[in-house]
Image (cartoon, rainbow, N blue to C red; front, side, top):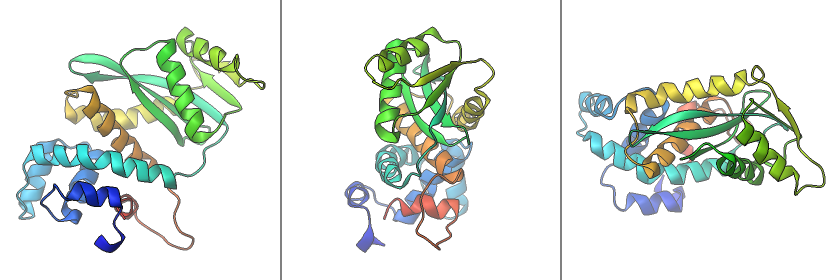
Length: 234
């Protein structure tokens, strides 16, 4: 496995003193299931592997940015009709805002954690999403004035404007995605700092996209969700 290992992963592993399969399994469980770090410590102990819960957290913080970057290269294209919304995430005891968008099939387009909920944050989310996924034909938002202002600002710089739809009831797909992410973050009992929140949410979103079938695979090769995640390290 080391012969074909992702160079960025190999660089991180120089500082980690456990087998790669153990590290990847712990990190995957951490972002895939509603488990606390102490749950993971106990589960590994039952398998005869002594791993402190703080070590699991450290592995996740080091590896997830590399794995998320690798996933971006294998992400399937998304549709041109977007549904965008934001949800609350507690960081350092205060509310931050996770901006998210899905297409009409429920595929995750992109996500972005911001400290504030305003026009600047919304515009940054749209710019990031467009840069990585192309320009949508239509964006559906709720009645948020900040989101509408951000889209108007983007349209002001475009020859062909993005069609904007505002409806409180058309964003059910986006809200369903929020619930999936919240189920995983709830056992974490809030994030200690913004950097850790951003990295762990990125890993959770990445795992969620893999589970929804958003990762490209080689023709004729069938892989489990777990194996798709592990393949990001090679």
